Length: 168
Image (tube, rainbow, N blue to C red):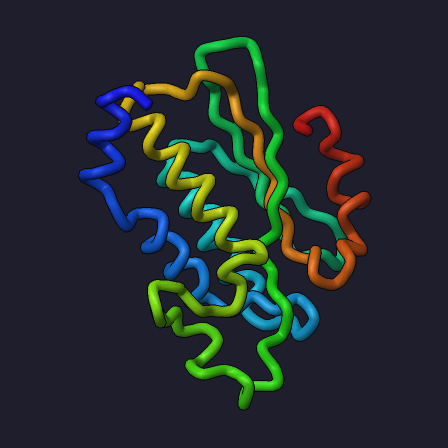
């Protein structure tokens, strides 16, 4: 790792965790229809803050999927997939802290969605922010689709992806 990137990471230690906590505080339970629109908005806003242009991909009966794109300096493009929905938190009595209040215990962060899949979103966003801050632009272009129904089997994903195939 070069010294400029290492310096950025040292100066911004904790950024990924802060992003993760922000994502995990927002309930987004597709099976119950809880918080999905708010989570789509939060996700879109975080992508825009990281330098992406965004677009909501819509299909009847589906929560919005967020498409994001950021141009890099090479002709290569990486397509990323994630989802912003989570499983229900029940049974609540099995939680040692509220499911949507990120809590650090023994050096580990506990919250609904912290590993599936909000942790991946936070890690990717933090990495992209670090690369942009260090080098000014990404080495490759990134296209990213983040949907809101993976935890219920992505019943509308084809209806979202097919009309927008040229983006993906």
